[in-house]
Image (cartoon, rainbow, N blue to C red; front, side):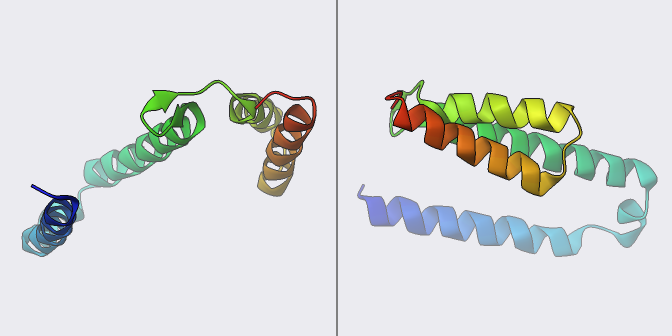
Length: 103
């Protein structure tokens, strides 16, 4: 199997999964527990994507400036800094660590 086959299969499965969502009864969607579960899953997915993009480089694990930037951003977030400040702290930390040679 080549890459195009797997790409098209993934697209087809993603579309089918989205299509299945139209068959979910409206009564189920109005349940407050469903809203909490959906919100929690969204947060978990975003957190996992952030971690994967931070420590993965292709097929290998990488401990580079991204890890330091994530830690600095987490500290700024814990100090309840505004989102823009968190982003600037993370980017600035990554730039400083790369300037210091931590690639």
